[in-house]
Image 1 (cartoon, rainbow, N blue to C red):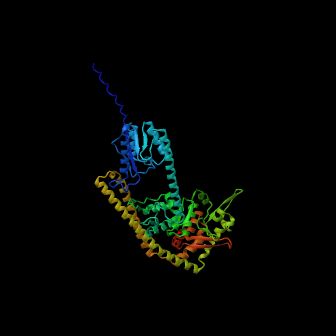
Image 2: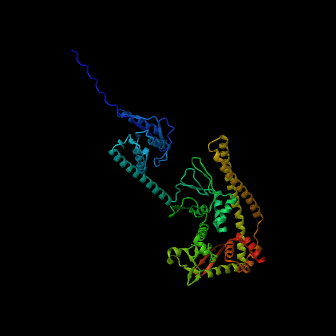
Image 3: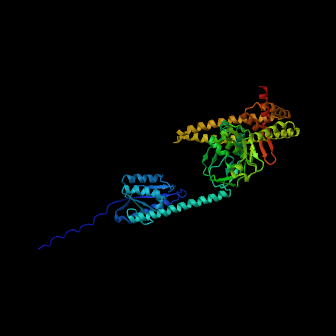
Length: 528
């Protein structure tokens, strides 16, 4: 009797296929050129981990998901976007990373990623941290790790902020976009004066004191072809200056950096390590005008405050502002020291001074000026000195314009080469080329004007006759002027008025360069 044949043994069921995508990332691209770098290490570790799980059906997908030189603080990464697209298409079961911070450093971003992966049936596995988000314990562990990672990131940000604040308090430059008048030292961390640009900065402040409004100065700067700072990064990238707008000019004129100070978060002002390129008096007068020209200042303007922007307290040195009040339908005008307004009367004893009386005191002093020959001669000498000082400023402006034109011509050459080479950005290059050519033409026009001004200065003289004529015509013309014209005439002639409340006297500092213009003004009025 033959034995029955033996039944074949039942083979174990083959494990389900688990498709694994390897994601790698590194924040810096400094060492990517090496034969074996961090991305290679991350991928090799992930491949070995997948091989160890081969019995569970794991296999590495051939696709490459990597982000070299991208921060983990953002999800805007090309490799991650490709990974998410394949997850959404149902091509991936496991996302394998060396460490979870390679995927993201943000707990909020991780929550979004985990939700997306779970929605499409994928989970996250970390090679070195031994967890799998397909299990509840893995998800708990992962959330704990990310919480600590985010805590560490926030602590680093706080330490960096504290360090920057401490550096600012010591007056150090801690980075940012340089401003006109300064260059960043080659080694970084320090500002150096650019003498050519510094001359332009001083002229911009003088233009505002002359025109007393942002729009006229913006128009003049655009006519001259002046722009904000053009500078080059340490990596060699060039940032071209842009035309001034009203708001850009306001920020420029308010920048404490020009008087050698550092502004921290708009709350603290500290003495800087860098040299000042502007005197404090000029800066303060500009701030007074900026404050007076704000919307609240427009209301004051209707009262004819002819000393606004000129008047300073002789006791504390701060500006005196116009402060009208209305009582029972009648308006009373005063000038008040800003120190007293901000810190109380105990901070400065000047108090309030009736505006009509103080204005009359100043005007009478101007009227009496021509009666003192010594004052006339001293003013005359100062006028000649300022005319001679104007020449270096014009020459410095011309040098700055020529240097800027050279940079712009180099940029045009670079863009033309891109167009000739058929580069992908060639289509967008025609616009910048046209803008640069217009800017160069504006600068060439301004250079011609400067050359004419220098010729005129060589012929210009302010003699005693000009001065005496201006002062002799001042008295009869004054009473016929409107308040706005009176203010303009005073600002043309006077640079500053220091009022001493204790003695009730006003000391005038004259602007000699306005003498010839004043003579012309008064002559026109007298001939009408």
